[in-house]
Image (cartoon, rainbow, N blue to C red):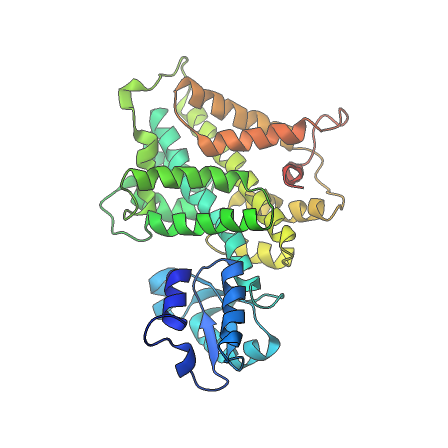
Length: 372
């Protein structure tokens, strides 16, 4: 279990003492790193070319961090041949939470694709936590009190709730460095280019991660990315009208709802593009670190739209677009960059340009039409 594709390659095939020739005949090799699908598929071919086609490779990226790894309660997404899964199943069970071991159809590369699609949510929602609370700061809200309200609202995400203590207090022990999510984000955008898929939300997030790296935040906890939204201080604009505190909080909620809706659509449409089981993707993401109130609310309807099926909900997209627009306009008055919120609003507008005049509103899940 190493951090990067380069480290995996070095341990397994390169250097003076590579692991591949030393493995026993018929050994099961679990690759638990978050790596591009193309890398693990190429690794499988290289192992065979090395003369070790007997080795059973399992593409099984994990999620859960060091604590859950020590407890044997990781989330694992495993793709491989039936023989490799069968032979490695006991070890996969020992490493994982019983409810969070996902066997992904599609063989080598499918596990990495599943993890990649989950990380679309992670990449957007780690940053949206800082974007939302940075917005709240410039609205003059108390961040601790606002945070409590956000985690019980439709703007909730697992990442927001998890990162909140580290956003509020920079002295809290490092849990997940900016370099980690930056690496995962670049896997997403690189693989998207490779398979000719658009990731406008994740690409916007990636630019902010690069900005953080350039400002020396790479080794910092990703909760410290709020610093990117706190810069400027008094140089930023001021509110041009009085807004009640509850209305300000609602602006932040609406910003997060819009971002998380687009993140959900980008995730599921990318999963559809690479041929994953969409119900399995949704089940995993809703109950993992990619979870959000909006994913839970509209995920199933997004899947129906992707399949060309009817959606029972008849309205919501125009309303949500208007709410998001109000938040973005307030950010503009404050001269505060809201890159994820602005990109999300652009996607709403793109879809609504093609909305039929009747009915006056359409389902929120129609947002996925921006990707298909």
